[in-house]
Length: 131
Image (cartoon, rainbow, N blue to C red; front, side):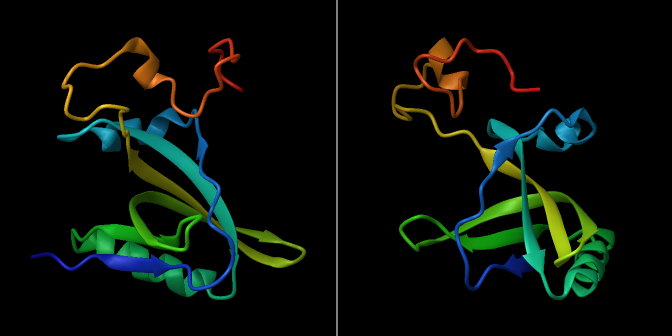
């Protein structure tokens, strides 16, 4: 089994994942399950070391995974498909694009409603994209 490279969030809040319109990464989403491309960012004290580890793993054909606590403080993992470092006044920000599998309301049903594709939208949302 191929050993993934991990980016682990040990302390701090659960990352906020936002849908993105960055179409350059969408081809990575192809696979056996439905997924969406989301974006998150967080401050880091060792951004360059993380970037080098991830680049090495991808060059070796290994996956990179983000390991983080969810709202209930349970550990979750998602595949990282891209990263970028950004310097700000407070330090380095790690920007991550991740692949998140779509979870449907009734996985045993096997059929999908049109509403299943409205990920993260409120009932009163008009369906337009935020960008």
